[in-house]
Image 1 (cartoon, helix red, strand yellow):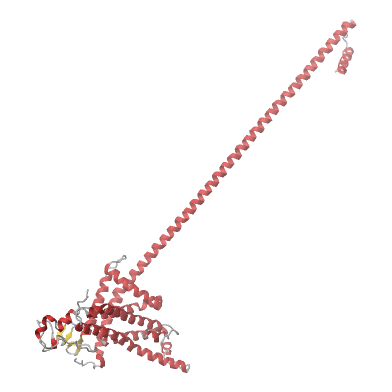
Image 2 (tube, rainbow over the protein chains, first blue to last red):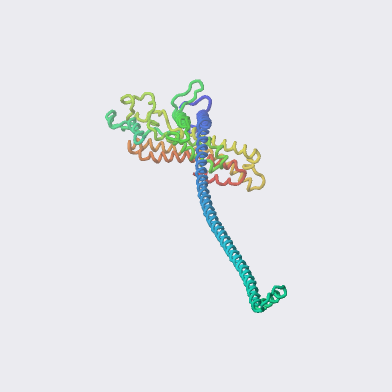
Length: 169
Length: 299
């Protein structure tokens, strides 16, 4: 074992010169790894982590979006059904109303016609009665003329007969 | 891929039965020299600087880790595959651990340091099981290898391996321990301010605080020792175990212990990095939470 001039040999083979060489070795490795290897590794690991996190988040979001869409679709369908039911109900009610209206109108018209008929018949009856009364008066006067033998032409006589007939009625 | 192969070589270097007749009467092979001191391969002239096999190992480990990471991150793809996937997996586990222990912000800040420590120590530890480590080397002067490459008999341990696991050398582990402790202190000073941080160690408010402060200072110092000797002890012991078993029971012996050594290598690298992380996160915490370090320091 030769002893270097720069440093003395210590027990157990410890030699400051050799330790310095080992330190240099360590520093070289440290610089290589810390400058070239570890940052690249760290960057890749972080990037990959970010990508994976992004992917998982996207998947989660897509899942929740699908669930939302399902919920929305169900809501829309339900609303549509409600609306359809509403429309049918409305239409039914409207038809019912129209039917009632038409019915009422028809009834009213029928009543009207009946009333008109009734009025006309009453009028005709009154007319007939009048005419009858007139004829009866004439006949009575004629008969009386025949009986009396003279004409009951004057107004007093005629009024008398009519009064009589009115009382007879 | 190293299975049962690595210590084929020591047994061959130690002298296999094929070459048994080269030295009748003598041992086929000897136990290798076991020395805490790393072996010097050559000295750089001028400054007379010894280049040891563990230093070579450390630089090889550094080159392997750097190449691996640079190759894996050269063309980053958002959908990872192959090498990038593997490196990302290992790195993100450690990143997550850092953020768990030190919080999001500090975890990200200290990760480069923790990651460098972890991967350098991990590969340094795993040198144990790579074929040729501890077994290929330069013979001592005056030794004549059989067939040009094999050492047998009494010559079998006269070898200086070219590469030895860096963490089986105290220079390596002590350097890392000092880096760890000094950077912890720097973070402490920078985050808490000079007086607050010093106040952790020197406090005159009451005698108990004063005593606790002294204990803190001592434990801070002993961390250097526990850090360096824990790693050194584990890896050196594992290395010796494999080499000795390679000579006692060639082919089979070391193989049994390979999984164990891979595990120990990983655990020690993790412990080193994790303790550094814990100590830094304790140092940047204003008060309290200081009592955890005594327990964690013993693992």
